[in-house]
Length: 93
Image 1 (cartoon, rainbow, N blue to C red):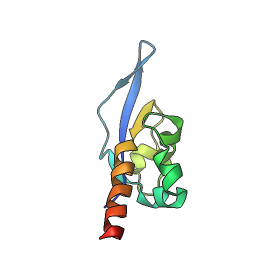
Image 2: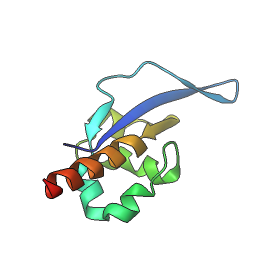
Image 3: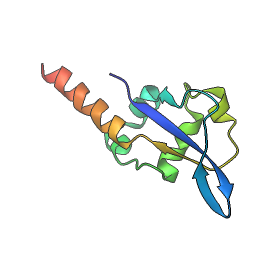
């Protein structure tokens, strides 16, 4: 099981950030970063927030994502929760 971030690129249109077509794969592994921050800190991360935005710099983020200079948001909340649920279940088994 891995914790996966999903990147949503956006562009400004009439002062609103709107979703745009991605330049490549939008999902990437954030398991090393999640493990290094610990369970409690990782589970406190919210989608589309400053706390999730840091994953743009994750080791496994594609180069086009790391280079993105427009607005964006990242979803990780459900994936992080599922990751720790699976990890707990594996330990209990």
